Structure formats: structure tokens, C-alpha cells
Image: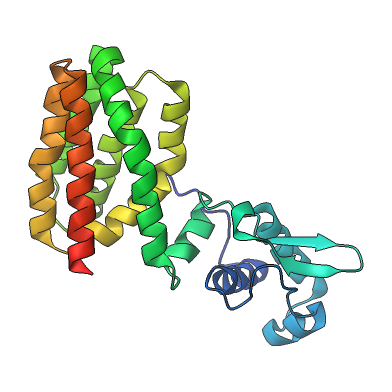
Length: 237
């Protein structure tokens, strides 16, 4: 089950401020390398205390979005320092004007890792790990389109393949990628039910080839799945 790893509590005042400032940063309202407005101005805008603002800044700093230095103030960090796999940052990015760019970058990252993971899984997966991949696929088959289970089972499938690779770094990548996968599936899956249905046999091909211990075919099947999904998204846009 995908855990909610968001660290911003929107019910707290400083959490609400951190969310608004974070959204503005990733959307380019506050430009990279440029100082944020003076603390007094932000405090007045949100009607918050300096203590609450400092707490909001701590959250954003921990996510790599801002940096504070004595005498120079607080400025927006360069994007290369942002923790883009942080669930909050990721959600802010997907809600911003750069959503399509983030989605495409994620696909490119997946295309460089997941086919290799499928190939390794055909070599290295234990019977228990193969059963986990199969279980996730069966959940995909029985999931009612448009429900959370549609997305969760898809994430579970890809995480199971990554875990079955036998490579601890790839498995760790799968854990880190869970929120990114969920958000991307939320965007892509909800575009058309026919795309979801068309993707099921492509997932099954990955499963079957891993079960058959055919590493080359498993790699090709995963690459085909990702390429087909990517083309569907581009056509829809």
C-alpha cells in the first residue's frame, strides 16, 4: 500500500504558508536565485508571526527549495537542488505549469531503469517475488476503473518488478518513486479508460516473461509498455 509521506501539515498555519510559498516557487512566481520578499511582507500577507514563518521556511529549506544566508536573506534555490522526489515538491510540480515537463522527465527516468529491472527480475526473482508481481497484476485486472485501487495496483506492480530485480539500489529507487508513480498514473490513467484496458496485456507480458525467466523478452516487454504509455499521453495532449 502506498503510504502518505507528505510532510506538510496543511491544517497548521505554517503548513499552509509553506504550501503556498512552495507552489509559487515551483511555478516560477518566485524565480530561482532571487530573494523571497522580505519576511515582514510575507508575515503581513499571511497574517502570521515570525515564528510561524520561520517554521515554514524550515520545511521549504529541508526540501531544497530555499536557502538562507546571513545578510543576504532567503532566496529560491536553483532547481537542481530541489528534492523533486519529496512528495510535497512533487505534488506542487504536478500542479504547476511545468507538469507536462515533469511527467516527461519521469518517463525518461523510468525508461532508463525499469526495463533493466525487468531483465534482472527474470534472472534473479525468487518465487515469492514473482508471486508478488502476479498478485499485483491480478489486482489490476479486477480493479474498477476510476477507483484508487486502479492506481495503487499499478504502482504495486511496478514496485514489485523493481524489488524483484535483486539490485538493492533499484529496489530503493522503487520505494522512493512510489509517490511519483502514483501521481503520474493519476494523470495518465484518468485520461481514457481504453488506455487503461489496452495497458493490461502489456503488463501481463512483462509478468509472463519474468515467470518464464526470459530476460531479453521481459526487458523488451517493459520498454514496450513504457513507450506505448508515453505515446498515448503525447497523443492525448
